[in-house]
Image (cartoon, rainbow, N blue to C red):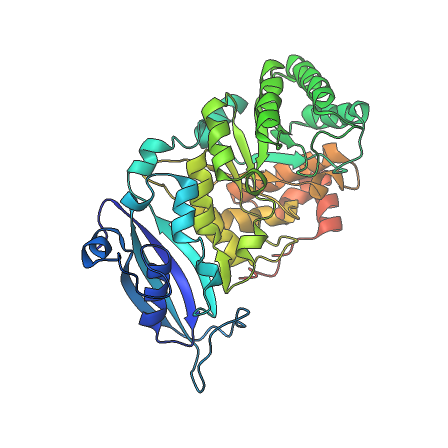
Length: 425
């Protein structure tokens, strides 16, 4: 059993060596050991600081290709296992970068391993004392938007890059008038000469203020402040001083430590974008699973976190997306309430299946092309998304809702309804 002062890491391990030998190689490499015995690695030192293999549970063969340079003894068969290893917190303390050095570090380079993937992390209480996590989360975001219930609907500014501020003004005006809850910069939009962040902030906040005066509602806009540390802090201050209500950070591009550093100084919700997560998650025999990755991002302070959505345009299956949504919604260390963000190819035809399989409206659903690409324009795109989700949560058949909402019927005609014939699994 792990101690209260240990981190437990769960791995998928593939190897041609005996499974127990491979597990011990991970534990040794990532704590006190090296490739050979050394004089000062005493039994007392190992007892106090060595990582401990808790369990090795063999799995069926995966069929995954070997990692380059894998040790493969003659006539040996590759075997797979789920391995749990406990790392003493005394080795590195409640520190995200040093935690990663221990549970990930060099292990992806070990010749003994034909495959190695960090699946999950069980973290002890000192991490909760060190990292306060999301400042707003689900409830705080709902309060800022005055949307106490129902799914939150949002979009991404399209085209992703290239719009000058005055054209952005028109896009934001139309979306705000249509009743959108949330708008964000694309992750590709930083601080370019054609649309400096300061100009975007001025234009967008002015339009949102005008919309609030006319409609009584003010959408949340997430400005992308991703940058070097000094610029990221200045970008946040710029948004906050102008009356902005959200900032976006590409978590992998700045790192968990930079996200935690920003969280300590941040007055606004942090919209956590997952750009580059595929580097860690896509190869099944290598990397860090989204379950483990999302825990680190939540600890570091992400109020919103992208999970992808069903029937998305990227590589993930529906089951993988649902696992990611569940991971973000599962309490961590007694809290860390982060809002799952569904994106990538989202259209009105996905609302019913998404609601059926997540059984929650504590979601931020972003439709970029699904709103901007509507045949009658973005206003009709927002109307269609809202009508589809209303039908989903009320148990109304999508076709019946579409017969009463022309914008929804137009959207279904263009984008289709991928689950009309049943779940895609």
